[in-house]
Length: 129
Image (cartoon, rainbow, N blue to C red; front, side):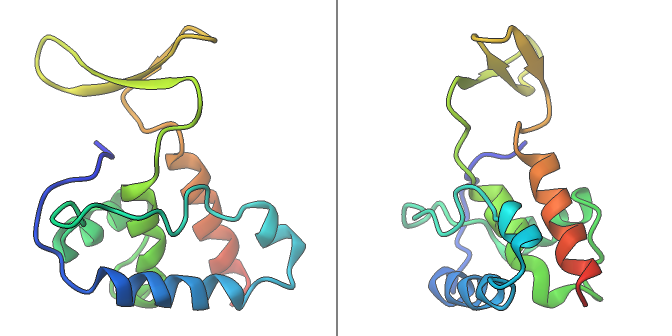
């Protein structure tokens, strides 16, 4: 559910720059820094950038209001393009649904292992407004 999806979302560099600016606004807050997005600013191969529609859909999935939080949509983009943490691998079940497995812990989940991290980051940034 959280892999780099194909599509022609243009403006990824501009969105990435905006994300860096947004994140730097909170650099003096150690609580927000502790929740800094893992993998933020990861380069995505050309043609693999999420579309604006995918970003908005993922924002809703993460609990965001895309209309009220338009300036925070970079968090959803970061979540969509986040690499898997060490020890996690992506698989498909018999029905074709992707899931994630951690061989070290034996944990398996249909939710990307970092989704809660990005939800918490969004809530923290939202509280600071």
